[in-house]
Length: 299
Image 1 (spheres, rainbow, N blue to C red):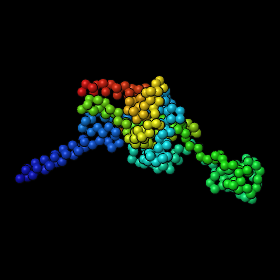
Image 2 (image 1 turned 180 degrees about the vertical axis):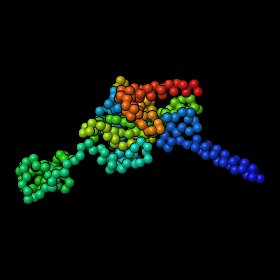
Image 3 (image 1 turned 180 degrees about the horizontal axis):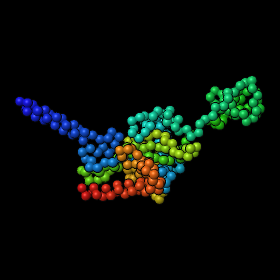
Image 4 (image 1 turned 90 degrees about the horizontal axis):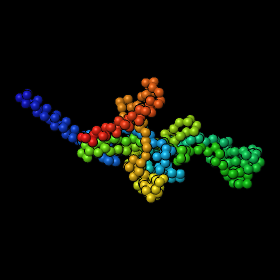
C-alpha cells in the first residue's frame, strides 16, 4: 500500500513538473518584437552594442536636422513615448521630470530679485516673477516685466539642455537567438539607451532607456520624420524601423551576458590588461558569434 502511494505521488510530481516545463517553454520575453517561443530557441545570448551615431556608417540615422534623437525627444515631449526607464532591465521607470533633469547640460543661475528702490545700471541682470532680465539703460523703479525700454528678457542664467545632435551614443540591448525550427539566426532588439556627451566632464551621460517595441511604433507612426538617409541613393531612403531590421548600422559589442554582469572592458581592466586588448576582445566576440552562427547552420 505504501509503495503504491509513493508511486502515485511521484507520478503527480512528474506530471506537475512536465506541465510547468511545457508552460515555461512556451513563454516569450514580453519586450520581444519577434516572440520566438523558448522551445524553438536552440541558442540565445544577450548582447549590448554601442552605436556611435557620428560614425560614418551610422550617419543615416543622424542627418542634420533629422536626427533619430530629435524624433525621440519630440515623442517624449508630446507624451507619445510615455514609458522611460532608468536602466536596461526595463523594470524601473523614470519620470518625465527626472528625464528633463538629466537632459540639462548646464545648470541655470539664479539672479537676485528686482527691487524697485535699487539703482540699476546698463548690463545688470535681475530676476522678476521667475524670468531673467537685463538692464538696457541705467534705471530705478522701472518694473522689468512692463518697462521694455529699460529692460529686456534674457536667456542668460537659464538652464541649457542637450541638443539632439549632442545625444549621439546609443546602447542597444538585444537577444541573439538561433531558431531551430527555421534554422535561422535572429537579432531580437529589446531596448535602447541614449547618452549625451557632457562637455563639462568629458564623459557620456545617460538620458534614459526605452523599450525597442515602443520606439519601433514611433518610427512607424512618423514616416516623414523617421527617415534613414541613404547618402548614395535618396530613392532608397528607409524608415528607421526597417533600417534597424536590415542591420544598416554598425554597433560594437560592449558586453555579452556573463555571471559577473561585466562589460568586456571592465573584465580586462580588472585583470590589469591594456585598453587595446579590450578593443581586440570586442572584435573577437563578434568573430565568435559569426562562427557560432555558421556552425549552427549545420544543425
